Length: 157
Figure 1 (tube, one colour):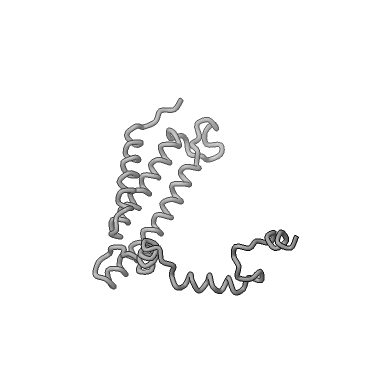
Figure 2 (cartoon, one colour):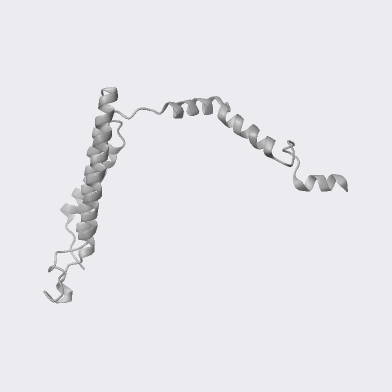
């Protein structure tokens, strides 16, 4: 049974928890800090789960039992690259939002607010009514929605 470093596990859990909390904020700079914290927490979790360090995984350099597994290190390296790209993308979004609005808060979408308001009032939107009418006109069975294919056969007999 391998020993697990409890300090690294706690640090990883704290980074993931704080990252999720910051990710739920409206400010893009806080979202970015949350993403970076979550990325670092996941990387530490990968390294902790890989077990103790061993010899470099080069064939013939050490017995096979003492070699370290290169897969967790490769996954952490991949996570770092993905985190760098995500950080650059969120930074660009925050900068653009700052240029346009003077702040980096994520705003509500106007269309989503309209849909939410119509759903609360239980009103059908104009676009849905047009699509529903077009579908009813294209239906070769006619406009009677209550009549099914078996209903006409029952009426004839």
